[in-house]
Length: 68
Ligand SMILES: [Zn+2]
Image (cartoon, rainbow, N blue to C red; front, top):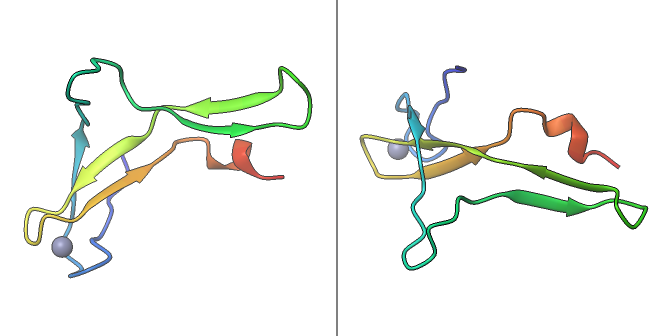
């Protein structure tokens, strides 16, 4: 797992967190429509929390898949 610094205060963020959607029970997916009908990109994000200021960040592992 990559080390991430908080964008707000430069503290090292804590990874391996998850987002819980209240009332839903589904995980979050970051999705982007592709060019074809079934050509859709979807990734589950890694969630990081800054233990100093509370900033929350999400990163996808295969970000290059979202490039045009
Ligand atoms: Zn912070």
